[in-house]
Image (cartoon, rainbow, N blue to C red; front, side, top):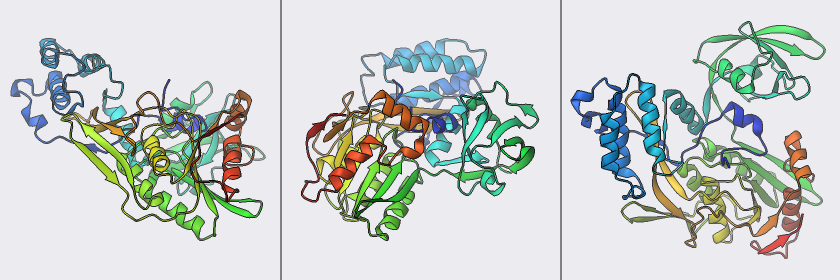
Length: 432
C-alpha cells in the first residue's frame, strides 16, 4: 500500500507527487569535507557521503543486523561510469536496511520533495485531471493567487497544447511536468472552453504558496460547524490552520470537524504547532533516538479554542496526521472518527548532498502521549465508520461532497457534535 496516496484528492497526488519527510531538510556539517580526497569529483563521493550520514544518524545502530562497514567497502569497491550507476548502487544498499522511509533521491526527486515540504511550487498554479470521457487534460481548479487565476483560467478548461505541443494522449503527470518550470519563464497554453472555442494564453511562471488548509462554515440545523480540511503538514500548514480556526471562531461556531483523511503527513514541527492550537495542555508526542534518548513534546497553553471537535481519519492518514490525531485522542480533546490509520511511527530527517541529490533517513521512533506504539497498527478511532465502495466512489467523483451530509463520516461527526450530552471521547463502533 502506498501511504502517500490521497484517496479523496487524486489530482493533487499527480500534480504534487513526492514523499513527505517528517522533519525539515538540513545539511550535516563536515560530511562533504570528510569524504576521502581521492573520491573528489567521482560518483563514489556521493555514495560515501550518503553512507556516512546513515552511519551516524540511522535509528537502528545495528543497521537491521547488517554489517554497514562491509556495505561501504562493497560500494567503494565498485567502478561507476556515471552518477546514475552510483545512485542505483546506493539505492540497492539502502534497501538492505528494509526501511522504506530511508531512501535516496536524485536531484529532481529531492527538488520535488523540497517544494512539497515548503508548501510551494514553481509554475502557473493549476490542479489537473484526465477527463475520463474525453481523455483530455482538464483544469479542476486554478490555485488561489496564481498566474492561472490572474489569466482567467477556469475550472473545466481543457489544456489542448503546451508550448505548441498537443496534449493528446499525454498523461496528467507529463502535462504537469511540462507546465512546471523556472520562475519568471513564460509558457503558452492552448485552451479549449465551452462557449468560447479554442484560444491561447501566455502565462509567466511564479512561486506559488499551496493551499493546504481549506475551511468553511456549515450550518447544521441550529448549530454552526467549522469544517477544516488539512491536506498535508507543509511549512505553511500551521499559519493556514491558525487563519482557519480564527476565521471560524469569528463566526461563532459551536464546534469543529478537522478532516485528516488522505493526509500523508509532513513536517513534525507543523504537527506540533497545530496540536498546540487545539490543545491547551498535555503531552503531544514523545520520540526515542538511536541512543535510547527520549524527548517529550507538550502543549504550551496557547490553544486557540476549547470547543468540541471531531477528527476524521482513514487508512491514508499517516505520520504527522497520526501524531495530531493520537495527541487529541489520548488527551480526550476530540473524538477521532473513521477507519484505522496507516501506522507510520518513524521520524525522518532529510539531508542535502553535495551534488544536489538528497537522502531521507529514519532517525527516531515516536509514541503517542499514552505511550502507544502505532507502528504497522495505526491509531484506532474512537468511532469507527466504514464507507461502502459506492460511497467512496461518489466522494472521489465529486470532491465537493466531502465535508457535507453526503459524506457519511462527516454526517456521523455532526451527529456527535449536535449532542451536548455526549462526551468528547467515546469508544464504539457504528455500522456503515
